[in-house]
Amino acid sequence: MTKTATKSPQLKSLSDYIQERFEEFSRSQKDVARYIVDHLDEAAFLTAEELARRASTSSSTVVRFSQALGFEGYPELQQAAIEEYRTTIAAVGSAAGPLFSFDHSELEGSLSADYSNLEETARKLTTEQVNDSVAALATAQRIVIVGVDQMAFFASYLRHTLSLLDIRAEIVASTGGESLQRLGRIDENTLVITLSAGRAHPLLLRAMKLALHRGARTLAISDATMSEVGEHAEMTLYFSSNSPSFTRSNTALMALVQALAHGLYARDEDLHRDRIKAYKLK
Image (cartoon, rainbow, N blue to C red; front, side, top):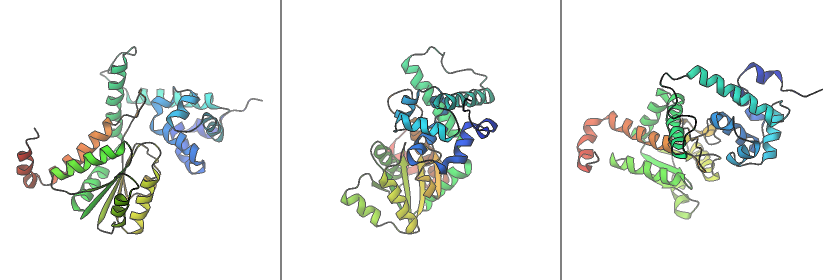
Protein backbone atom coordinates (compact mmCIF):
# COMPACT_ATOMS: atom_id res chain seq x y z
CA MET A 1 0.00 0.00 0.00
CA THR A 2 1.42 3.38 -0.99
CA LYS A 3 2.17 5.74 1.87
CA THR A 4 0.44 9.08 1.59
CA ALA A 5 0.57 12.33 3.49
CA THR A 6 -1.28 12.53 6.77
CA LYS A 7 -4.62 14.28 6.76
CA SER A 8 -3.37 17.41 8.50
CA PRO A 9 -1.45 18.82 5.49
CA GLN A 10 -4.54 18.24 3.38
CA LEU A 11 -6.85 20.15 5.73
CA LYS A 12 -4.73 23.29 5.92
CA SER A 13 -2.06 24.99 3.86
CA LEU A 14 1.42 23.50 3.85
CA SER A 15 2.85 26.68 5.41
CA ASP A 16 0.34 26.62 8.26
CA TYR A 17 1.01 22.93 8.91
CA ILE A 18 4.78 23.46 8.93
CA GLN A 19 4.49 26.34 11.39
CA GLU A 20 2.21 24.26 13.61
CA ARG A 21 4.76 21.42 13.72
CA PHE A 22 7.86 23.64 13.72
CA GLU A 23 9.17 22.87 17.22
CA GLU A 24 9.19 19.13 16.45
CA PHE A 25 11.89 19.44 13.78
CA SER A 26 15.65 19.16 14.07
CA ARG A 27 17.78 22.26 13.57
CA SER A 28 18.54 21.39 9.93
CA GLN A 29 14.90 20.57 9.26
CA LYS A 30 13.94 23.95 10.73
CA ASP A 31 16.18 25.58 8.10
CA VAL A 32 14.16 23.80 5.40
CA ALA A 33 10.89 24.74 7.11
CA ARG A 34 11.84 28.42 7.29
CA TYR A 35 12.85 28.51 3.64
CA ILE A 36 9.62 26.91 2.42
CA VAL A 37 7.38 29.16 4.52
CA ASP A 38 9.19 32.38 3.60
CA HIS A 39 10.06 31.54 -0.02
CA LEU A 40 7.10 29.45 -1.13
CA ASP A 41 7.06 30.87 -4.66
CA GLU A 42 10.64 29.62 -5.12
CA ALA A 43 10.53 26.43 -3.04
CA ALA A 44 7.49 25.10 -4.90
CA PHE A 45 9.54 24.74 -8.09
CA LEU A 46 12.96 23.70 -6.74
CA THR A 47 14.38 20.20 -6.81
CA ALA A 48 15.31 18.63 -3.48
CA GLU A 49 18.97 19.38 -4.21
CA GLU A 50 18.24 23.02 -5.06
CA LEU A 51 16.08 23.49 -1.97
CA ALA A 52 18.80 21.95 0.19
CA ARG A 53 21.37 24.37 -1.23
CA ARG A 54 19.11 27.38 -0.62
CA ALA A 55 18.41 26.22 2.95
CA SER A 56 22.11 25.49 3.60
CA THR A 57 21.53 21.82 4.33
CA SER A 58 21.57 18.43 2.55
CA SER A 59 19.10 16.86 0.14
CA SER A 60 18.71 13.92 2.55
CA THR A 61 17.52 16.39 5.20
CA VAL A 62 14.92 17.70 2.74
CA VAL A 63 13.66 14.17 2.18
CA ARG A 64 13.57 13.40 5.91
CA PHE A 65 11.73 16.66 6.50
CA SER A 66 9.13 15.67 3.89
CA GLN A 67 8.64 12.33 5.59
CA ALA A 68 8.43 13.96 9.03
CA LEU A 69 5.43 15.89 7.70
CA GLY A 70 3.79 12.65 6.62
CA PHE A 71 4.62 12.71 2.90
CA GLU A 72 6.09 9.71 1.11
CA GLY A 73 8.93 11.87 -0.14
CA TYR A 74 9.88 15.28 -1.47
CA PRO A 75 7.77 15.14 -4.69
CA GLU A 76 4.59 14.92 -2.60
CA LEU A 77 5.66 17.84 -0.40
CA GLN A 78 6.55 19.83 -3.52
CA GLN A 79 3.10 19.18 -4.97
CA ALA A 80 1.51 20.50 -1.77
CA ALA A 81 3.72 23.61 -2.06
CA ILE A 82 2.68 24.12 -5.69
CA GLU A 83 -1.00 23.82 -4.77
CA GLU A 84 -0.64 26.40 -2.00
CA TYR A 85 1.28 28.72 -4.33
CA ARG A 86 -1.43 28.48 -7.01
CA THR A 87 -4.14 29.11 -4.41
CA THR A 88 -2.28 32.14 -3.07
CA ILE A 89 -1.75 33.59 -6.54
CA ALA A 90 -5.42 33.07 -7.41
CA ALA A 91 -6.52 34.73 -4.17
CA VAL A 92 -4.21 37.73 -4.44
CA GLY A 93 -4.59 38.26 -8.16
CA SER A 94 -3.62 41.47 -9.95
CA ALA A 95 -5.63 43.55 -12.36
CA ALA A 96 -2.39 44.84 -13.83
CA GLY A 97 -1.13 41.35 -14.59
CA PRO A 98 2.47 40.17 -14.17
CA LEU A 99 5.30 42.71 -14.24
CA PHE A 100 7.01 40.85 -17.10
CA SER A 101 6.04 38.07 -19.45
CA PHE A 102 6.78 34.49 -18.39
CA ASP A 103 9.58 34.26 -20.97
CA HIS A 104 11.69 37.02 -19.40
CA SER A 105 15.40 37.77 -19.32
CA GLU A 106 17.65 37.37 -16.28
CA LEU A 107 17.46 41.12 -15.66
CA GLU A 108 13.66 41.13 -15.83
CA GLY A 109 13.49 38.07 -13.59
CA SER A 110 15.65 39.75 -10.97
CA LEU A 111 13.67 43.01 -11.08
CA SER A 112 10.39 41.09 -10.92
CA ALA A 113 11.59 39.19 -7.83
CA ASP A 114 12.54 42.45 -6.11
CA TYR A 115 9.17 43.96 -6.99
CA SER A 116 7.50 40.95 -5.39
CA ASN A 117 9.81 41.15 -2.36
CA LEU A 118 8.69 44.70 -1.66
CA GLU A 119 5.02 43.70 -1.94
CA GLU A 120 5.49 40.64 0.27
CA THR A 121 7.36 42.66 2.91
CA ALA A 122 4.67 45.33 2.97
CA ARG A 123 1.93 42.71 3.31
CA LYS A 124 3.57 40.90 6.23
CA LEU A 125 4.51 43.98 8.27
CA THR A 126 1.89 45.59 10.49
CA THR A 127 1.59 49.27 11.37
CA GLU A 128 1.98 48.36 15.05
CA GLN A 129 5.26 46.52 14.40
CA VAL A 130 6.74 49.46 12.50
CA ASN A 131 5.50 52.10 14.94
CA ASP A 132 6.86 50.18 17.94
CA SER A 133 10.24 49.83 16.25
CA VAL A 134 10.41 53.53 15.36
CA ALA A 135 9.43 54.50 18.91
CA ALA A 136 12.12 52.24 20.34
CA LEU A 137 14.74 53.83 18.08
CA ALA A 138 13.58 57.33 19.00
CA THR A 139 13.68 56.78 22.75
CA ALA A 140 16.73 54.53 23.18
CA GLN A 141 19.62 56.06 25.10
CA ARG A 142 22.06 53.71 23.37
CA ILE A 143 21.72 51.67 20.17
CA VAL A 144 23.81 48.63 19.23
CA ILE A 145 23.35 47.13 15.76
CA VAL A 146 24.59 43.57 15.22
CA GLY A 147 25.18 42.40 11.65
CA VAL A 148 27.71 39.85 10.42
CA ASP A 149 29.04 39.11 6.92
CA GLN A 150 26.83 40.75 4.25
CA MET A 151 24.54 42.09 6.98
CA ALA A 152 27.45 44.20 8.27
CA PHE A 153 26.91 46.53 5.29
CA PHE A 154 23.26 47.07 6.20
CA ALA A 155 24.17 47.56 9.86
CA SER A 156 26.54 50.29 8.70
CA TYR A 157 23.89 51.83 6.45
CA LEU A 158 21.34 51.85 9.27
CA ARG A 159 23.88 53.58 11.49
CA HIS A 160 24.49 56.12 8.72
CA THR A 161 20.79 56.95 8.30
CA LEU A 162 20.42 57.31 12.08
CA SER A 163 23.43 59.63 12.22
CA LEU A 164 21.74 61.96 9.72
CA LEU A 165 19.06 62.43 12.39
CA ASP A 166 21.68 62.95 15.10
CA ILE A 167 21.05 59.50 16.58
CA ARG A 168 24.26 57.69 17.41
CA ALA A 169 24.60 53.92 17.10
CA GLU A 170 27.38 51.37 17.50
CA ILE A 171 28.02 48.36 15.27
CA VAL A 172 29.00 44.83 16.21
CA ALA A 173 30.13 43.03 13.04
CA SER A 174 32.57 40.41 14.30
CA THR A 175 33.72 38.43 17.31
CA GLY A 176 36.76 40.67 17.70
CA GLY A 177 37.73 42.31 20.98
CA GLU A 178 36.25 45.75 20.29
CA SER A 179 32.93 44.30 19.12
CA LEU A 180 32.67 42.11 22.21
CA GLN A 181 33.42 45.13 24.40
CA ARG A 182 30.42 46.89 22.84
CA LEU A 183 28.25 43.92 23.66
CA GLY A 184 29.67 43.93 27.16
CA ARG A 185 28.32 47.45 27.73
CA ILE A 186 24.71 46.49 26.98
CA ASP A 187 22.36 47.53 29.78
CA GLU A 188 18.67 48.28 30.38
CA ASN A 189 18.97 51.58 28.49
CA THR A 190 20.22 49.89 25.31
CA LEU A 191 18.29 48.92 22.18
CA VAL A 192 19.91 45.92 20.49
CA ILE A 193 19.09 45.45 16.79
CA THR A 194 20.07 42.29 14.92
CA LEU A 195 20.09 41.90 11.13
CA SER A 196 20.01 38.41 9.65
CA ALA A 197 19.36 36.53 6.42
CA GLY A 198 19.07 32.77 6.42
CA ARG A 199 20.41 30.89 9.43
CA ALA A 200 21.40 33.38 12.12
CA HIS A 201 25.08 33.73 12.97
CA PRO A 202 25.86 32.52 16.54
CA LEU A 203 26.98 36.05 17.43
CA LEU A 204 23.42 37.34 16.87
CA LEU A 205 21.96 34.74 19.20
CA ARG A 206 24.62 35.55 21.76
CA ALA A 207 23.86 39.27 21.54
CA MET A 208 20.10 38.72 21.80
CA LYS A 209 20.35 36.44 24.83
CA LEU A 210 22.76 38.84 26.55
CA ALA A 211 20.36 41.72 25.89
CA LEU A 212 17.47 39.79 27.42
CA HIS A 213 19.59 38.88 30.46
CA ARG A 214 20.45 42.53 31.04
CA GLY A 215 16.97 43.90 30.46
CA ALA A 216 17.73 45.68 27.17
CA ARG A 217 15.10 46.23 24.48
CA THR A 218 15.53 44.11 21.37
CA LEU A 219 14.58 44.30 17.69
CA ALA A 220 15.23 41.47 15.22
CA ILE A 221 15.15 42.25 11.49
CA SER A 222 15.16 39.01 9.50
CA ASP A 223 14.06 37.33 6.29
CA ALA A 224 12.69 34.38 8.29
CA THR A 225 9.27 34.61 9.91
CA MET A 226 10.38 31.82 12.27
CA SER A 227 13.84 33.26 12.91
CA GLU A 228 15.91 31.78 15.73
CA VAL A 229 16.86 35.30 16.79
CA GLY A 230 13.28 36.51 16.50
CA GLU A 231 12.17 33.90 19.03
CA HIS A 232 14.11 35.83 21.69
CA ALA A 233 13.33 39.37 20.47
CA GLU A 234 10.82 41.80 21.92
CA MET A 235 10.11 43.23 18.45
CA THR A 236 10.53 41.70 14.99
CA LEU A 237 10.45 43.06 11.45
CA TYR A 238 10.32 40.75 8.42
CA PHE A 239 11.68 41.34 4.92
CA SER A 240 11.36 39.08 1.88
CA SER A 241 14.61 38.08 0.13
CA ASN A 242 13.53 35.84 -2.77
CA SER A 243 15.92 35.89 -5.71
CA PRO A 244 16.50 33.91 -8.91
CA SER A 245 20.19 34.73 -8.61
CA PHE A 246 23.04 33.10 -6.67
CA THR A 247 22.51 35.34 -3.64
CA ARG A 248 19.55 36.55 -1.61
CA SER A 249 17.90 39.82 -2.54
CA ASN A 250 18.37 42.69 -0.09
CA THR A 251 16.15 45.21 -1.86
CA ALA A 252 13.34 44.90 0.70
CA LEU A 253 15.81 45.14 3.57
CA MET A 254 17.19 48.39 2.18
CA ALA A 255 13.65 49.71 1.79
CA LEU A 256 12.87 48.71 5.37
CA VAL A 257 15.91 50.58 6.71
CA GLN A 258 14.83 53.62 4.69
CA ALA A 259 11.29 53.34 6.06
CA LEU A 260 12.52 53.23 9.67
CA ALA A 261 14.62 56.34 9.08
CA HIS A 262 11.67 58.12 7.48
CA GLY A 263 9.47 57.15 10.41
CA LEU A 264 11.99 58.69 12.81
CA TYR A 265 12.16 61.86 10.73
CA ALA A 266 8.38 62.16 10.60
CA ARG A 267 8.07 61.91 14.41
CA ASP A 268 9.61 65.37 14.74
CA GLU A 269 10.04 66.86 11.29
CA ASP A 270 10.55 70.40 12.65
CA LEU A 271 13.47 69.21 14.74
CA HIS A 272 15.21 67.46 11.84
CA ARG A 273 14.31 69.68 8.88
CA ASP A 274 17.20 72.16 9.06
CA ARG A 275 19.75 69.46 9.78
CA ILE A 276 18.64 67.35 6.80
CA LYS A 277 18.43 70.42 4.57
CA ALA A 278 22.08 71.18 5.33
CA TYR A 279 23.09 67.74 4.00
CA LYS A 280 21.48 68.52 0.62
CA LEU A 281 20.34 64.93 0.26
CA LYS A 282 17.60 65.68 -2.28
